[in-house]
Image 1 (tube, rainbow, N blue to C red):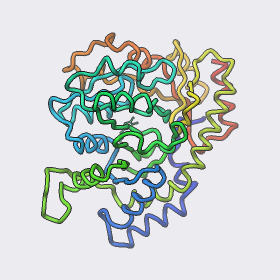
Image 2 (cartoon, protein in one colour; image 1 turned 180 degrees about the horizontal axis):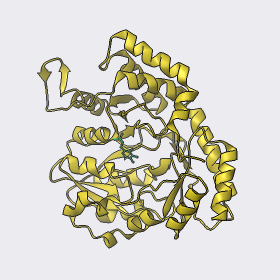
Image 3 (spheres, protein in one colour; image 1 turned 90 degrees about the vertical axis):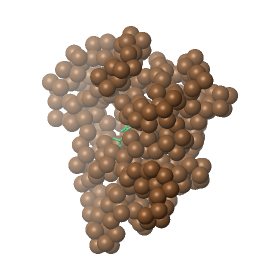
Image 4 (cartoon, rainbow, N blue to C red; image 1 turned 45 degrees about the vertical axis):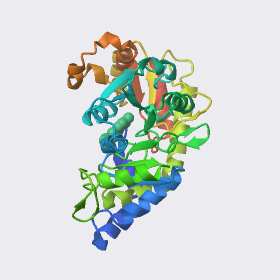
Length: 363
Ligand SMILES: *Cc1c(COP(=O)(O)O)cnc(C)c1O
């Protein structure tokens, strides 16, 4: 049996270091913000080649606070991918703005820059690309459109820890970059956690204010913020895992290469990697017109697969109010019925990968 992902294996590989880090926080008596969170923020900013990082409670809050820090709210429109995890849209609608979906590029499944300008209106305030599956979106084209139309760029990098676009780490291409450290992400905490990174000092300060009740000084509230602080225990765990992130990304890359080589002669469509992209390989997603049958055969062979994502946001009950017909975004609709994510993770062995490749070819 090969599970899609086994989070316990990541913990066990680092157990002495993680246990020591957790004990350190417990013994310190400091349980909200403080030195452990500040140390992680400094290390994460440096890793991302960004000037600032602000630790937050989760990835959805990172997107929400990025939008709020840019004063985006009711009456505003934000351009989002039609093909993404629903959190990208929820952050936009959550601040009272309207998510305006743009269809993906056929090859990469990421937002298609060539379709963005047609979606821009006088109400558009920002572009919100997602580096889906850990594959960087085409940032130069996106930044160029934003510049010409006076728009801000918020990146959803929840799947892209360590990915590079034209050699530069994801982390500060746009105005503000949003991270999730949900346990299953490439840099995963042992619970919920998130952050933003940015080169803009004012934006970083605004997010730091908003995450802590809008307060810099206790009982002095400058604005109506919320509580979205990164937990110091999670910060300590993340510091341990950050030390091995590059090595673990390299292992994911090795797995991805073995898949790509092993399945070159198969009927499924394999991930397309543009030559300017160094993906973080959060997911290895294949595409097939007979997805149900393929997934069943893989299950019978004892191989766990998942679907990212079975229902696109515009077809969720949560967005029936927007009255977007399924066929209005046919690419997102079709991808949802054709994609299949194969097992991927730093602890997957090449023997296991070979078994998965054989099972897929036999299916
Ligand atoms: C995981 C994820 C999020 C949300 O992160 P949480 O920490 O679960 O709130 C947002 N966007 C994308 C693309 C994600 O994969």
